[in-house]
Length: 417
RNA sequence: CGGGGUGUGGUGUAACGGCUAACAUGCUGGUUUUGGGUACCAGUGACUCUGGGUUCGAAUCCCAGCACCCCGACCA
Image 1 (cartoon, chains in turn red, brown):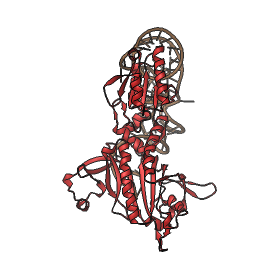
Image 2 (cartoon, rainbow, N blue to C red):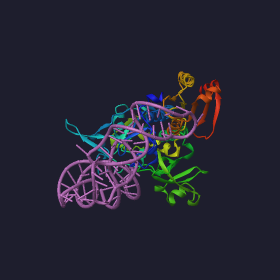
Image 3 (cartoon, rainbow, N blue to C red):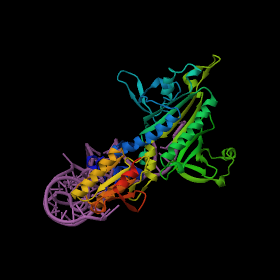
Image 4 (cartoon, rainbow, N blue to C red):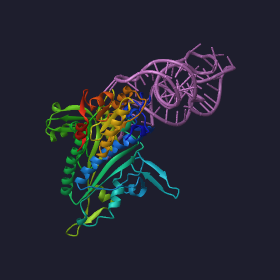
């Protein structure tokens, strides 16, 4: 994409009311625009990042046998009264509205109840199970206090997957597979090293749920980890019993601040019993379905990545999520130089390599460099009078201070998969 | 929801209760410059969040509302 066609602009200063580093950088670089507290537009650059994150998750969820679908954002009151979660006294983050035709609707903060209700139409026999479905949904939550930029919003995108299984064993098998798939996802997103499968409060049916917690100063959670034994425990369940169960002592644990980027939860048969989701087994008996839910916060993930991968100059995207792979900068307005840059840009795009081409005229080299640093695209490639003279380009990784001169052919070859 | 703070051109800031609300940045036009936000000239752009009140006079003081930020609580 040509930078002259990109409608967003960079800015030197972040809005004064934005304290969170992730929001400051993302706004300055033009990835997002703030509509109101806890609500951010995804501008073209931010949209591309979200898309890349989705692609990775989609691949891993499909590999698990997940089927992608999408549910509505508005939800009926009845569905939620069956599990007693419609009341504001019980769920305090509801956005609700009245229908002109009469009756109330809620705006989805979760889809556990509606999906289970919908699934009732499709399950009657053990032959119909298991079912794994997932969606990328915009969730609306009337948070008492939005904060930390993209990390706790009132509107955010979440991948939520649900598993419907015949029994505990079938459920457990999938649950474990999902843990592995999630690990792959976070590895691919570049945060695998710092992401821990964490024991957390489990609710009525199970003792623990599992949270995926990524070390992040801007996070809201405190967890205790032991890297060697690969154990992580949320502060909320850290007690003598937990330590004993996990066979670890308090002294072996390191306290870290984290952001919850994923959560997987076993409902057992509780919710399906409440909602009347049963099936007939081989013997013709009527049995409640086992339900599991598995979430990943997509937009929060962007915030976490921005927090973790950035420096004083700007963002530093991992290649897997970067809006573009290469940022080509043309310096000066010498016709030969511009022609060479155009030629390379054409060659790269023809090979489906994602390139942002800084073709702006009348913009000084310094400004282009600063913008490139702020945008944080993994590879910066400079085409200038100097490089053209040597029939080469200058490549610099965003993560490195050094650059190297590379011939045109080698440059193209290097990025051709 | 409890506590604290802040609302001034697009953005960041300034202005004792008193001249036409200042500066930087951005944007427009021009000259200049071309490997780290080049320099200069000329322009552009604000009912000082809203509504009341005090005062001869309010961006400035008071009250209310709204918005935003921070701390806490909350976060199946």
